Length: 114
Length: 114
Image 1 (cartoon, rainbow over the protein chains, first blue to last red):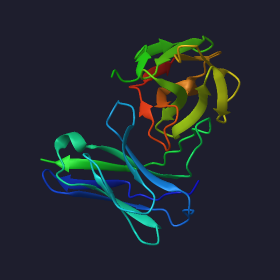
Image 2: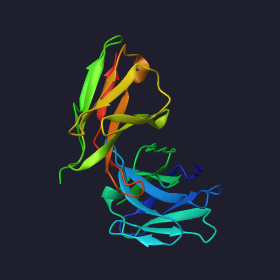
Image 3: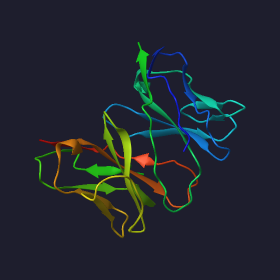
């Protein structure tokens, strides 16, 4: 799996958009970009994933550059509850059976400031 | 739908003892994976089960074992506990047939070995 690089920490004012970058310069053509977050003392929570097109769901937007070497997770209106560690992962698609190994890096610790 | 549940949530054991942790996946999910999370090593994959069979295994010693029952519930066992086994143990499930990495994590069991 391709490795990812994320800043160790970021702050964002409450109500503003939080933009979390991720570099994945060695990503392969069939690898997806996934984002998870982990709020203190809880299990990781899936946020969004994408291959090459920008994606949006009720939680966030994912912007992937044209060369796919980097991406940005956008939380449009950050709240205090968005304070968490955010993990960017790149991974090839899996089959129905097996090979479920997820590898998380150190992630970005996002702090939302009141 | 109820989420992934793990029991117990907290556990304190002494070195040399053994421990069994339990995980109930989301109803309908047949794949269960286990992870160990520590501050120093981050999230590390232990193993994955599907249809009562171990499909994939991480790089952990044989003291770590698991099993899955016909109702998809899973247990993991750690024998001869060491101080370094202190960690948050996370269970994650996903439904059969889903393409991609949308795993759903439980809240974890925090194990402290003294």
